[in-house]
Image 1: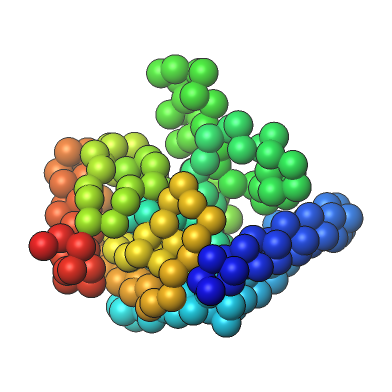
Image 2: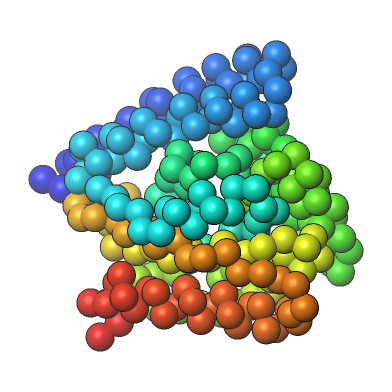
Amino acid sequence: MQSIRSILFLFFLILYTPLYACACLIAFPFLTTHHRYTMVRGWCRPVIYVAEKLCGIRYQIIGFEHCIAAQSLPVVVLSKHQSAWETIAYVALLPKRLCYVFKRELLYVPFFGWVLGLLRMVHIDRQAGHIAFASVARQGRRCLKEGAWIMMFPEGTRIPSGTQGRYKVGGARLAIETNAWVLPIAHNAGRCWPRHTILKYPGEVTISIGPAISSQGKTITQLNHEVESWIEREMRVIDADCYR
């Protein structure tokens, strides 16, 4: 039965996404960046709603008050990365416009990438070598100046539940370079929406948001270790069964 529900959800995405993307592409030339993002939220919210009703993927948020307290700060959000669910849900649920840092190749994905390219986010040209970070920092400063938050996944790729990837220093480096705070997030979405499969499993995703961490006076290594320690310690609280 869950396989059927997962396939129905996939069909929903296949039908809904191109239609909504076409509407965005038509409307975007007439909208500000803020209103473009608001329109994209209009895609994300129904997706997590249908995932809940059709596949049984519920969610709860712990520590949302830390988001509220940080709204006036320049922020780099560093999050655990297990699935596609959180990339969609964060847009729908977090209070600020998010500028995701993503690889440039995604811009060429039909519909999804075309809309992504019009949202003024931060893209990395991995072929640019050592000068790539300078471009990321420049784009990041522009996002922060516009009042948006920067969103990064320090492990770089989706990590299966119960495991830990290597935390790359790019997010900590960017926070220090832009004098931003870091908002750490742990979650266990991989249990319900695992990578490399269309199957979705019922359950409750817990998103845990930590207090904002200052980057002032810290080295890249110190800040990265502080973020990693908080996220991984919290993972063993919200997803304890997977770490036994």
